[in-house]
Length: 304
Image 1 (cartoon, rainbow, N blue to C red):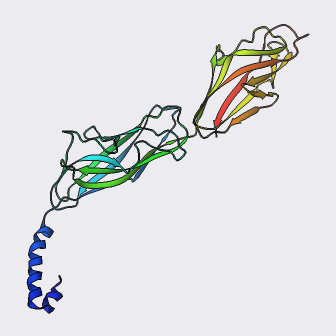
Image 2 (cartoon, rainbow, N blue to C red):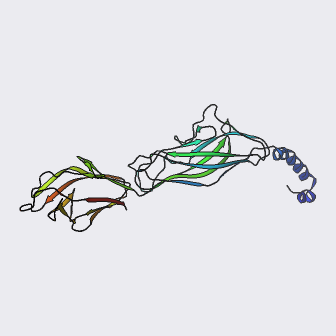
Image 3 (cartoon, helix red, strand yellow):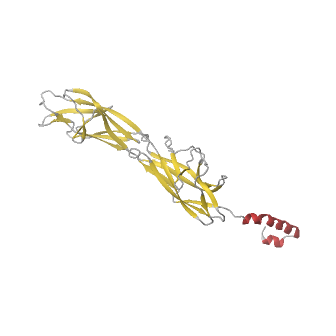
């Protein structure tokens, strides 16, 4: 009730107002802890290529400030907002597990069950009125190399809670990982080495088709393009003379004409691990000079 009301009210109402003031004034003057959690950034998305690195890590700096008028004593925790644990993609891919660590104490605060598990002991944050503390939260994910490209995120609350589970301060954070478009290509099987490159012995040259003891493989986080080029434009060249034997390559179901660079594409928004058995179709060998014939073929892959 305001002062103006007191001045204009009749005596019975003045008594009620005086009683109300006697009840509420001590509560208003009661000291309180009020923590402000102030991260340097409200979002951390780690860029990661699973074909080059095993793990993905990032850190968030957080200022914890006591803006109340009494001491604050609590511990870090994290809680989810009604969704299941894990970085998630809007493409429906498998979620990626992660870990949150309070670096100063080395305490795991990951909300695997929807909130951090409260443990006995651990590091306590103690701040007097007006004090602040610079904290560091590490975010670590261990995605495997079969992850589909795209962004995976989770929004959570970073909290400081007292021993009796009272919330002293909270701040929303969005954390995640960005799986980049990437692809890797290689050969497996009976592959030798010659002049620093992979080599395959075709045996005795005879006209016709032959399955080679090798397989081309591609690892990717999504779609990709395989390009193939021949140094001799699809011909095996004699080692000492200008004699040639024409040939074609087949990679799985893809028939390649190497008289000029050729390619094929795989369109996908999911991770892939594809194998392409290699088959060669050798042209006419009759009347050709005896000796060793060879060609250099280059396989490249590009993520789409």
